[in-house]
Length: 216
Image (cartoon, rainbow, N blue to C red; front, side, top):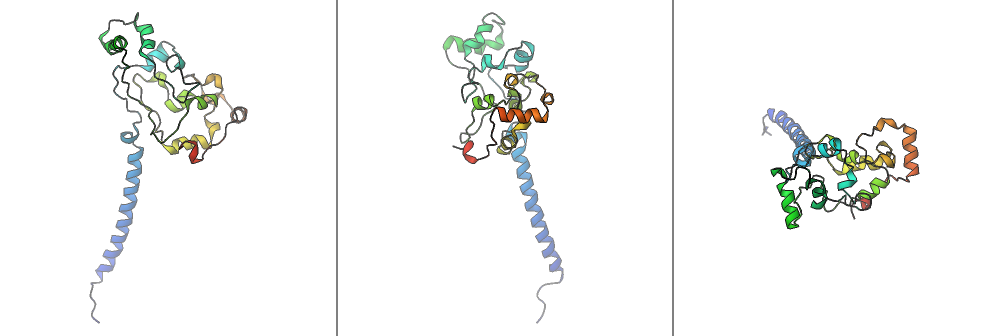
């Protein structure tokens, strides 16, 4: 029987199969990188806000504690966005006429809350409780980064599931004494491995990786 295909088709077939596998692998890798990129995660991307609030100025410069503004962080699942009257407690006297703070004064006059843009905004299908993390000795900077160095608030971590699970699997890597939870100058190297293990036991921290922990 006469040969239908030229012998070169064997080479073309092998190259095509290899090329398809390579292309598929490259596509999967590229998609994974896109999902982890700042374009998707918003990491290190400062969000535009109605008022350019500087954590660096208020935290590092003035020494204001996180809980002064985020009043419910120790008792509630939500850290709390400060009401305008909290801002005006200072700014009715300090920088009280600067045009930059006019949205704050307008909010106070009209009793309409400022439409802040959420920087750390988890999907609706994810349950997260600030208070339990605070009680278990997880510091603000562990998730939010060095806010005392941020002129404009930006996301430090992806908040992707694999990032959350990395801490849930090994909580000893990030635990700190409860009295240091709100300190931005706390040095993780100040604890030994054994001291971390002791805190995990003392705070009764479990390695919770069950889906229902966060997806309820």
